[in-house]
Amino acid sequence: MLQEEEDLSLTIAHIVQKLKGSRLYSQLERQAWHQGNMLQEETDLSVIIAHIVQKLRSSRLSTQLGFQASVSLQKPEIKLESLKEDIKEFFRITGWEKKLQNAVYSELTVFPLPRHPAAPPEHLKEPLVYMRKAQGSWEKRILKSLNSMCTELSIPLARKRPVVEQKELLNKWNEMGTDEPDLSLFRPVYAPKDFLEVLINLRNPNYENGDHLNLRTHLGLIQVPLKVKYISELKDYFIELSLNTGQLGIDDATQVPPELFENEHVRLGQKVLAEQDSAAAQQYVRQGSPTALRAELWALILNVSNQPEDLLYYEQLKSNVIQHDLLVDSLIYKDVKLTASNDDYYFVFEDYLYQVLLCFSRDTSVLGHFAYNSASPPKSYIRGKLGMEDYAVFYPPNGVIPFHGFSMYVAPLCFLYHEPSKLYQIFREMYVRFFFRLHSISSHHSGIVSLCFLFETLLQTHLPQLFYHLREIGAQPLRISFKWMVRAFSGYLATDQLLLLWDRILGYNSLEILAVLAAAVFAFRAVNLMEVTSLAAAEAVLADLSTLKVMPLLQIFLFATVT
Image (cartoon, rainbow, N blue to C red; front, side, top):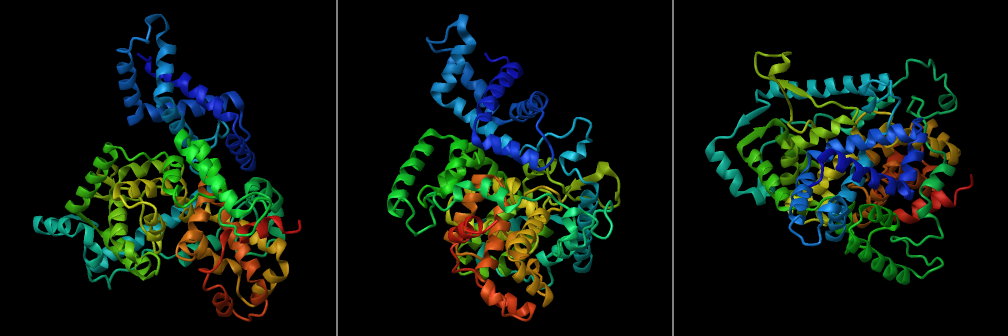
């Protein structure tokens, strides 16, 4: 048998060392440098390994590995004198080593980068005090809005459904889109424009009147000094998107005819799937996923396998929805009706959206991402026990209050996954890795504040005439592009183009490409925008993005821009 902690630590240390040689790990190191956190080799590596061991020891995979180790003892090729090495070889042959490697890699991609040993624990969530305070104030405002709605409508935050209502909901579970509840009195807790106003008013108290190198010449709406990539760094970071590299989503012939590249790319993708290697899959999708392979590739990158236990967990969440009614359920219904139900691409998935989002609101495993999210889950108190922590519960159970447009994070995934439990797992992983950063106040390089600052910096630096023109007529570009970025362009691009964009989010494990695309859209429509004289006219020019092709826009902006 494996000696639990010691052997798991050694195995994971070996896997981490192996991954350290990959280009993806070197990008993690560059990301650390970008955030001012130079990796201190031995110390930080031991911290990472200890964290991953702790996380995996309580996982289903650890139990499965223990069971497989027991099974292997019955094999004649397992010898007592070489027990440890024989079991490791058994894991390699049977594919369990690969599963462990994928789990380790999955943890590496979300693990907060090591900080100085003397840094307090909250620095893992957000190192800048003023950002933490701003996020805290924003959370209080959201909670106040939610509680006000409760009071005004005289409805509880949660209640147990009567048996008759439970049976009715269960019977129409797959047809919830036909339901027409009266939601006229409900309003979204907040919309993206409300959030933007909060970000515009962010200030670092250590600097007065923009007295910082970043801000002296920055004429955009974001007035906090954040370190973002120059276009030369973006070119280096997104090198696989260069003009002489084959891409799915590009029709023009480069050095290789598109059809030949696509055939070879599909063959390579099938090989990656056969190997079941998450790191290889992540590298592969940087050039785009073939439509037929995308669902499997994304599941591999996100380490989603949809085992019987996952299906059972989903059914438990469904049971919780059936039994209890939450106020946020009405917010979810309202959001789907206002957004996806009115979208030409997504209205057919209305039932799926209700199922996934209602289950998501009950999923307490989502609370785990608050360890590296600048936000904190809101709490509710049992009646008469306000402020007494022993009587506090997280509300909603997953700690995430939906806002206007939230359902659009799920909608595009419905094109790829038709089994509700798998669709659910993919969305949950996408959320806890990426989407939460789009509505949290933080200094993270993929956080919405950094994306806004990067977008404005790119536009001001490389399209100064356009930037100044729009600013002078009261049409600050960020007021137009913010809604695209906060929804990761979902609902704005044609679905095939959106999925090509999300390929790259997964491939680079970064949301920075959203800011680059937003700037590229302005560059593409620059001639028309130079003629407008008002914000309304500028918004009209950029009202319809459904005909745009993502990859040509990104390539031209990044690699045909003079630096």
